[in-house]
Amino acid sequence: MPDKKKTIIALSGGVGGAKLALGLAQTLDSPAFSASSQDLTVITNTADDFEHLSLPISPDLDTVMYTLAGINNTELGWGLAGETWQFMQSLTALGGENWFQLGDKDLATHIQRKALLKTYSLTTVTQKLCEQLDIKANILPMCDEPVQTQVCLAEDFAEKSAGEELGFQQYFVQYQCRPVIGSYSFTGINETRVSSEVQTAIDSAVALIVCPSNPFASIEPILSVVGMQQALENIACRVVVSPIVAGLAIKGPAAKMMQELGMPVTALAVAQLYKGFATHFVLDCQDQQYQQSIRELGMQVLVRNTIMKTDADKKTLATEILHFIAQSEII
Ligand code: FO1
Image (cartoon, rainbow, N blue to C red; front, side, top):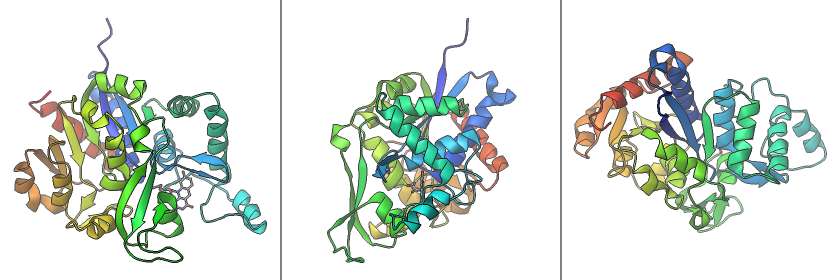
């Protein structure tokens, strides 16, 4: 009789999350772990998604997908390796909108996604794309309904006044995260629900790993899907990996957002955000002074190098987290 399926669920945004997801996928696939019969499901943020040039763009889904397929562009941190830009050059020559770069190869993903979305849900479309790319892990969007992160400006910026909202990609790409944020919201979130595919993964899950992704822009939208947090709380072991190391975000605007939202930029402040939800916390060696304070929040703490520069770093961190989970008294 085959072993009952045991799933490790990872929650991920873009680059940082995808790195750990790759480490987890490779580790679970290695001979040392194959006897544990654990598979990987990556539930990915889709609140960065938007329509651009009439195409449905899912930046975090694509970053996770390309990374797990081994075809990601490591220099840019998004898009595909060996990309060319003739489409963008021609579009620019025609006076088209060029603040958001779509590479020639990447364009195929968005066009194929658009075609498939006429018939299938985003979850099924993602599964079909992953199948074509030979990805073994199960990559799922956080939900099938459209959600869009909007940031509300605390100060005037360019032609926008304080109090006005910007879509996340405009904030992130067009304005390079320069506007000061007062608050943010997730348009459409109240119309979402946990998909049957996400629920099935949760039902067989032995542990949840929150990858080192932006707590506000990447993880909070996932946890805000109607019914998601309650469903995930049925998984006894819930590990958060800090995206803040030595007061800096590994990538992206997490540190800047924390500061503008009035929080100290520390791994301890990240742990406080997840108080009551996380049972385990992974802290970088550079932040070990917070170990005791985080334990006092009710979490077991693992102190390791969490900066993943090489593929070996990704696998090492993934292995250490999987051992931390296995040793836990909870499962
Ligand atoms: N990020 C940029 O900084 N500039 C871009 O022009 C850009 C284009 C782009 C196209 C497709 C895609 O899937 C991602 C793209 N990204 C780009 C990355 C993306 O906007 C961000 O990494 C995420 O939204 C943040 O998680």
